[in-house]
Image 1 (cartoon, one colour):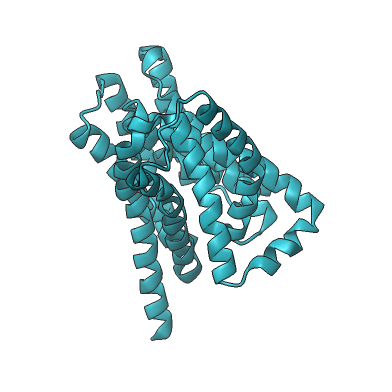
Image 2 (spheres, rainbow, N blue to C red):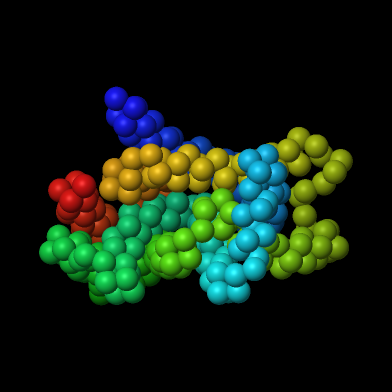
Amino acid sequence: MSNNKDFNKGLLMSALGSFWWGFIGVIYFKYISFVGHIEVVIHRCLWTTVTLVLTSILFSKMHNIKEILNEKKKLILLFFSGLLIFINWSVWIYAVSIDKIIDASFGYFIMPIISVFLGHIFFKENFTLKSKISVLIVILSILFLIFSDFKSIPWIGLIVAISWSFYNLIRKKINVETDIGLLIESLFILPAVLIAFYFIVKYNVNDFDVSNPSLMFILFLAGPMTVIPLFLYVRGVELCGLGPTGMIFYITPTLQFILGYFAYNEPFSQEKLMSFILIWIAVFIYLKDLYENN
């Protein structure tokens, strides 16, 4: 009975995390996009670090950090995964600020499929026939855009998908708790972020101002907005496994697509529609394979 309760709790938590990423997160970062994507990235990195330091103290995890600091190999890998998460955050925030949410959703639709492919290449993980077909359809959808309308290729989505897939690959190799790993990654990024923050303040191109406490509070929320859905989703994975949560994850790009098209009226060409139809077919095959093997 308790196993069923844990499983259902895991499904709920991963669904809430996916909903947060796909809906609440998009609305929040779209709302603060008037600040400018560079400053938004700075605040996301800065306040995520602060939030994770506070949660590490609250949940008595500081000793975990000290243990990892003594492992040189893990630190090097976390440095590179930190660069990848920084690229991912920066490109996604840029996409939201320039009305390319649909392109970003393209990336999150194909990301799990790319991850399966990378898992097979680097970890020799099982690569079923349906997985191979999904990967081929994704490649076909990109080739279709290259030959039909090169300008409509969702480069943002491809960068989002590739950076996140390789990030997951490195994190899988390290085997570090998600929040602790993200904190160390954030600490690696922090010096560059603080230098960038110094210069935007120096040249008076910042919106963040101590004389505007309401805006300060809104920008501070970039930290919890990053950490809360991550915690929910990862806890969901722990309770009910990668298979079910892998299916639930698709709530995120679906909601991003709906918001981009219906709420923010982003343009959507026929070429992109055809490409997305191919992607949705690939996703269907991938999910069917995931369901049959879990």
